[in-house]
Length: 300
Length: 269
Image (tube, rainbow over all chains, first blue to last red; front, side, top):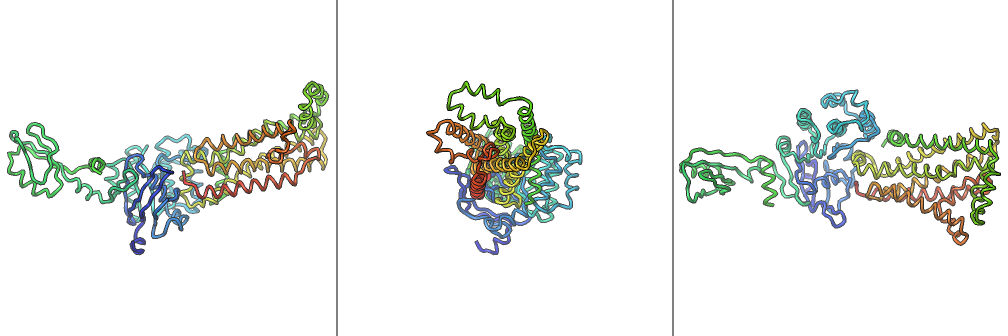
């Protein structure tokens, strides 16, 4: 990996491994994230998502491999890198004895910097002065999550690492959050986004990595992932055919005169073949990310 | 890392129990001094002690009977088992809460994702604990002085001895804090720090009591942390505050050093 390409990346992870004793955390994972990109990180529970995130924040020490953030090795420039990072963990908790104001004040003090737009951020997430004067122990799950989001964006970070950021947020607040993410992307912020909410990942991310049992099984754009899985074609024929075979399409199911195929190759060639059949109806759909994800997990 | 902001957070989290300890320490001290000046407690206790076996009598005369003088009573307020237990709980609570429990809740993970050096964090936490324990000791010191003043026993010698005892108590509590910090820096489980630290203190205390009662085991005394906490001996002019200070400061420094090493190397969580 040459140094100039490393410098152009917001995050570069190379051959990273982490074991907890004999238990696997992540094994030999590599991926990179471009500056200003919203990068999704998908995987089921226990796949190694949180381990990867903690390695990126220098909370865990890797057994092997390297992490470079904004062209600087994390093990050497940890403090400097963390100065430019915001982080929202999954199931975010604040200090229960502090009020919202005191909590944000503590972290503003630790960072020695404060976002000029803090009041706008608080207004967006409907955290009123009255809410912020209450102890965080009195906060609902959603309030706590909103405080966590504000905390992550408190200092205009260049890189934000988010783990399940919308859990606990109502649909209205989720939309506010999505708008914030796009706004920050426009400003050049890189977002590393881990979520189980696949429609959300599909909506926000341009590329994603899929991790399974501690190993990266795919790093691609959502479009190319979908193309890999292909299209689903459902046809309704005027009468049953004993053995229907279409070149370039795999039959998934047949029920009466209704057939479902998966098309991975060239769609136009398949359509040419289908046009010769006694068609009553035809539906072609692109798979959702959820289907892609499930497909990936079944096959890999 | 702004130490003052972090200390404020530590204070807010621990203040309820710390204030309770301060109030209890102060009132215990005043109550004991009041009892000693109001009743002839020495005669009452002496008649009870006479009924006990010989070795118990020796032990009680050493550690308890001497407290029935006014000076001794002023020192006893520092050496009462309840007072010792409260100080230990306060000292253990700080690392157990701010490392172990915060590791479980995830708040430490968020804190350390900020530009905070790990050795700065552990030093600030240690210093915050030391200040908090100082405030508790200060309340004991001030209430002792107040008691001595109220019961017309105030003299430069008594004030100086109470000052020495207070220093001894503070350094002793700092040692408990320091070894708890060392355990918390290494341990993975939340409850482990509290229970292991408390168990260590309890074992030391029991061994100390047995070693005092049973002369065969008195060779163990210099290896026991309670041997270096001796309010009554100091008050009676038989203490060795210099050695106590040296040992308590040395051990605290050692434990703190290990805490820094362990915490810098550990995974969060």
